[in-house]
Image (cartoon, rainbow over all chains, first blue to last red; front, side, top):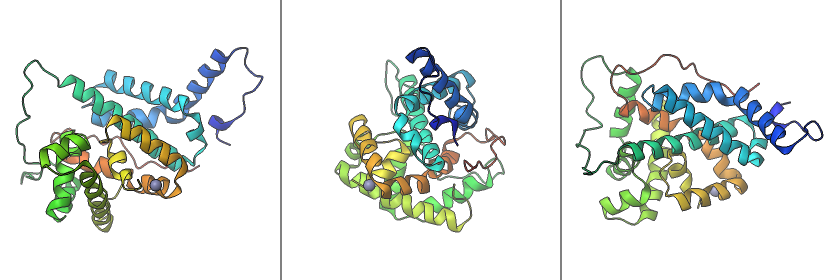
Length: 184
Length: 66
Ligand SMILES: [Zn+2]
């Protein structure tokens, strides 16, 4: 039985002690894998990654009903929680006195050298083979750290349309990646 | 509502909608299943964002099954 789900009633003198124990158990279960995962998104900034993991664990503890889910779902949820925290942090860090539009980088321009991992090339290929509408919403949201409503404003289409295109686009992308053997 | 799962997994919903979607997720088996299916996609997209040569080889495929 997963220790996260164990009944702890009566074993602790105070609610604080019980909370501390539960958080420690969550760290034991998820701390290591989360840290390895988050480090990749913080540019190997370990301190930042550790803060993100801590906040993720505390949020998990506050939403303990979700810890009753099956492990794959708990993990998927935790990754989403951590991703939001990273994105928020990145947005805060990038706020500068004179906010400038980030330079237009061509996300799909894969250098012909061998610097990029093979899978990055496969992902770029898959993205390229999506319809323009699907590729556009993926680029204008996730790849540029923008929310649905920010992207909607830039694209001049309703947020609901961005959300729906993103759904079909991401599903299509996942199918393509699965066919190429790099689905996560 | 179900189509929010992709935006949710990417973390691009605005705060209010993000919270609303989580409440939906609590009661929707279909979205729970899709969340698991799509959970790896952001990582693949991150490979396009990452600086060349910054890829780390420390992440074996992980299984949560025990
Ligand atoms: Zn649903």
